[in-house]
Figure 1 (tube, one colour):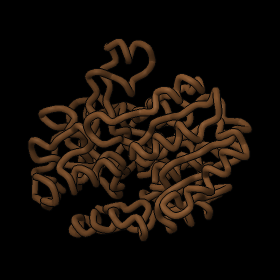
Figure 2 (cartoon, helix red, strand yellow):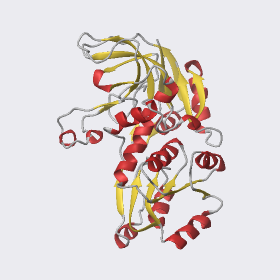
Figure 3 (cartoon, rainbow, N blue to C red):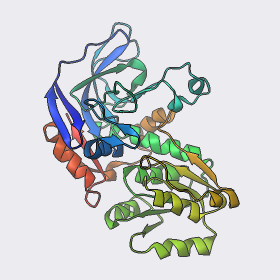
Figure 4 (cartoon, rainbow, N blue to C red):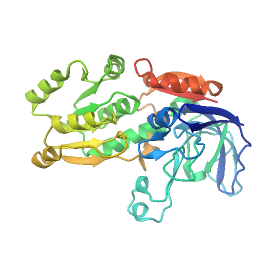
Length: 345
């Protein structure tokens, strides 16, 4: 079978590997669509994602869908032929985080397509993968594989909105109009946000944000004063999501949030340490919260996509065959032209 493997920065190879065997509780999935995430881009172009460095060949990919090809003898809930979305994480169930119902913080998690552990946890950019039955979420037979593959990034966004607390009637700022920022926008709107402003340094993703319902957009590379003016006129935003993964974005969120507001860090910031305006957090009593992946939100993301409750189709800008995977990564880096790029198998 074909497998996309990153060996080092800008060294991705399409290799032939043996098909994986099915374990007693395992499900073999024929992958059909797999999205390129920001972390995948970091691994490909930099050989690392934040503090996680590639130390051995890594199969990327953690947002994918497909159809069930084979099930293990102990599998009862899943049958061959079903269309499915795959939860990329498998939690231990017994660490303190799992016992507290926060499986996304599991100390022993196996999360596909990640170099956070060694040996690395291999991902879904392959013709076939075998996952545990618990990771499988069936979808309707008429849901396109390309849409089902949005379950993972949508779950990230739903979890970020959950971390922010009640959203009904809130004014919201989102820094970064990449795929996750746009999905946070959709999730916040569904949760009841009254007014959403989203920022970026490029006009094209901001145009897409307006197309899917943003109330206001600001190109901070050209008109940062417009955001400052809004903050001055309104006392600031009640909730801010930092999604760009840029320390400047976090500074903007802290400066633009009103006293007593909430800031949620969603984007992966650069490795190492950097200054944070801690006095703003103190003086304005800002609740600064992290949002790490997701837990039960994955099932809700699948339901939202399957029932048409959240429309992600405008975000899919390219589907590229697996034999052109390197080109797909190049397209995904072109933020002025593309939002979500997927590889198809």
